[in-house]
Length: 295
Image 1 (tube, helix red, strand yellow):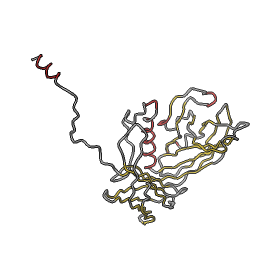
Image 2 (cartoon, helix red, strand yellow):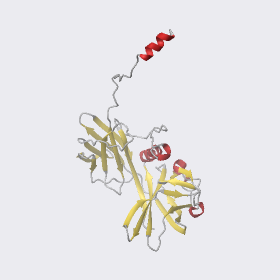
Image 3 (spheres, rainbow, N blue to C red):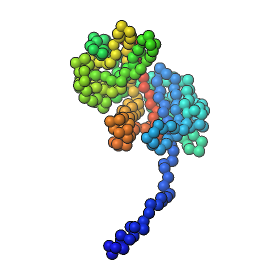
Image 4 (cartoon, rainbow, N blue to C red):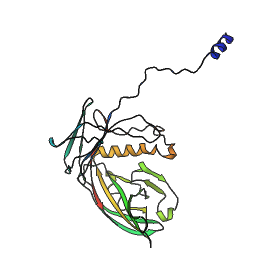
């Protein structure tokens, strides 16, 4: 029996078999964010199979876009062939919206959201230490129908060589226990200059229930002006709809899997990115913001 088994193995060779397996059918992916400060843009693309090299997604070339405000149609247009359609429409805070996208041969996609009122905030620069500027958020007023407030920053760097360039603030430093820890990590490097041993990546998120206990919020960011370089910071305080808040938090967690520390593998940890698109993927969400510029 053993000899026969060995003979059987010796006669085997590699053969490719096709069991009729096919990849998942492409779905329409929608990315559409509503804010009173910017024209409403709808991005439509077909989903694709993951590839580690740089991925591209085919635009949905034919579709009808329809937007309703409190049940009344305010936008009806054909989608742009390049996948990105600017409608020229700006929403109104406090109102609800419904998006309908009809794709020939695919069907209709729908989603609903609302646009919150803008927050109010007051921020003051305290000092600079090393390469970091220290700020205090002294006042923060949020509308009652939001889960949180997101703080995102930008800095404009001006110097003789590169001229004026605007970039996003990548890291924030604070020891506040009332800031959401979803994007926080330990970082003791230059802790004395930063005033913190905790780094927050890309944004600060304050849950609604912590809006008063978090004040005053002391935080620092990189970037000081020198004899040759001038740096000015801008901070944006964002009030999200429920869809925006859930999508952005889950999207950030999924993005962590594409970093070098996670072996650039988006499947290393199971993360479900939030979607509110019926019959498709993606997000339709409203938000508003208050901006303090050029500090």
